[in-house]
Amino acid sequence: MADGGGVADGGGDGKTDGEPDGTTDGEADREADGKTDGEADGGEAADGEEPGRSRSRDLLLLAGICLSALLLVNAFVARPFTVPSGSMEDTLRPGDRLIANQLAYAFGDHPRRGDVVVFDGTGSFLPEPDRPAGFRDGLRSLGRDLGLAPAGNTVYVKRVIGVGGDRVTSTGPGGRITVNGVPIDESSYLAPGDEPSGVAFDVVVPAGKLWVMGDHRRASRDSRDHLGEPGGGFVPESRVIGRADWVVFPIARWNSLDRPAAFAATAGTGGHGDQR
Image (cartoon, rainbow, N blue to C red; front, side, top):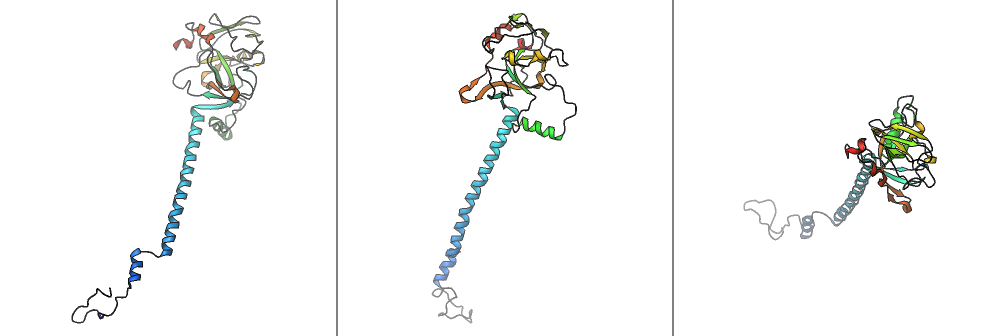
């Protein structure tokens, strides 16, 4: 510094006491700051951009997490379906949006009498495909499982009337359906004016399969219509996608689909339903 630097005796560094050391007070101040005014402004601008980029990354990450969670829920927990026909009126109407609970039978439980179930009718209501599934078929199936594609025309929704081991009978017009000899009062869910069955039948449900019928019996193609076919009208439990637990749209029809009390009369009569 001009006022603080001494010179060594005997030759020194070539500076006299009166010579400055090359740095003025103003320059020293600027050097001490480490940057000019312009550099400081540039640093503040850079600092201002980083939080914005960070927020964008956070939003993208959050959107990705939400989408992944939704796909997982659709694939393994609850799947939405649109009711395509009037075969389940008045319980379900065409256009109703329902949620199928895919965990209802996931841990060793079985469909019960009275449950409304969503199932794949391939092999029971529909013939097995003539050719093996290809790559595109696999993609469509994955899209349906994730809720990204429509369910397709192989998916049905019906009410379980009989489970494995049950004997289900009907005498036709004017008579009630019986399960293991117990007449079922279906008046709480049958469509107004419908009889329990317009055709007579007497079947024993094989183990691991279900006898299903629509609530609008006059408009439903169900297990009765496939008697005598290779599958006998019985739906394998392995083809059940889930139990229809809720109607969520339209809002005016928002309600839960509870098991009718009428089936409590069949408890203790046989079938796997007595294991619960």
